[in-house]
Amino acid sequence: MKNKTKVWDFPTRLFHWLLAASLPFMWYSAKAGGDMLQWHTRVGLLVLFLLVFRLCWGIWGSDTARFSRFVRGWAGIRGYLKNGIPEHIQPGHNPLGALMVVALLAAVSFQVGTGLFAADENTFSTNGYLNHLVSEHTGSLIRKIHLNFFKLLAVFPQSTSPPSPHTAYSKRKTSSAR
Image 1: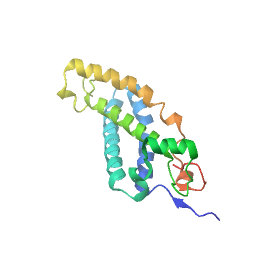
Image 2: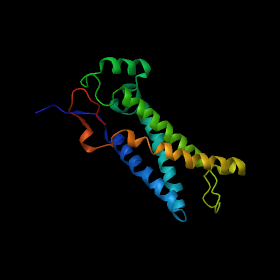
Image 3: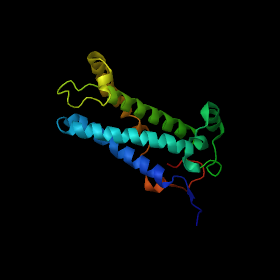
Image 4: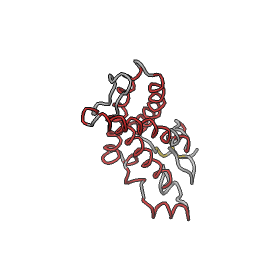
């Protein structure tokens, strides 16, 4: 029987699943409009909380959840592309996977940030929580950015496989486990 090395701890797995469930809901609630926009803003705050949690957990959390454990920079990416990294040396995300994690967290953060300042041009009842800090014109522009950036954000999860209970443990020698 193969030894199993735990790659994800429970808080990291919970973060992944809540974020994975939140993003499709955010799309649905924005498309549905009406009363669903109230839920859109509430779940948007949940996503903000998740991002803050993951940032903190990536700094002070368990050993395998720390960014310093798997984010290796450009030299690490070049080395990985040239030689690969055996998983027994670095279980979890390979350097390209780590780059994807950073890019996804940055993209979701940008989306949440624009949502906080966006204006609801239809009813003005579901403006972003920080919309009052910007002009009407700026809020309208940010709303357009928020709507259009989601199209780019929707591509991110499709460029990698979704989290799976089977990938919570490392079983292979040279591939990344999520």
